[in-house]
Amino acid sequence: MTDTLDRLRRLQGLRRQRRAAQPDIPQADAPSSPADPSLAADAIGQQGDHPHEELAAGEVIENAAGSCYVVTARYPLSVRHGPHQLGAILAQSPDALATFHPQFGLHRHLDYTQALFLDTETTGLGAGAGIYAFMVGVGSFEPPAHPTTPADDLEFVVRQFFMRSPAEEGALLVALADLMERHAMTVTFNGRTFDLP
Image 1 (cartoon, rainbow, N blue to C red):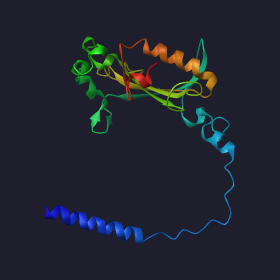
Image 2 (cartoon, one colour; image 1 turned 60 degrees about the horizontal axis):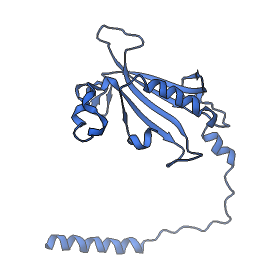
Image 3 (tube, rainbow, N blue to C red; image 1 turned 90 degrees about the vertical axis):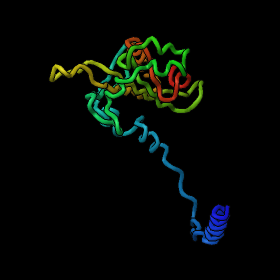
Image 4 (cartoon, rainbow, N blue to C red; image 1 turned 180 degrees about the vertical axis):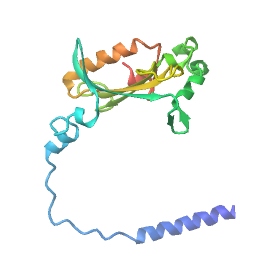
């Protein structure tokens, strides 16, 4: 008990010292001018000198709803992300989570090769007009585009779908729906109620 009281007294003493040492901040001579609105547009690529194509190598894809921009990266399963190799999840079974989430039917899925990993970046939280998923990132296990050995049966493919303007929302959603139809389950970062309609 005495140790705890001693610690509290020392912390209280530090608080008094911190209050006494106020920084000397000079007053501004004049208010700063407002930011140039074109700078914000440049930062998000709407009117900037750097179109998406220059910032990230990808391709414009077209479908019945229009066009959007997609960046694709392919990784061997041996690549490490943090302490684990990308392919390590394939040794796990989705049904290990079935007990915690019986409503999702995880016991039906044999492995994560059937999964589409999905995350969204939006212009805000909530619903309604003006909230867009301007970037949707998806990852999946797929056969390699250019196999080099017979052991190269799968790789992890990351696709980032970019909505360069609100007019491309339909095309992005159609492209995403087409990809989702090829997978038996979806794994999200934020959860079904946020990332999925």
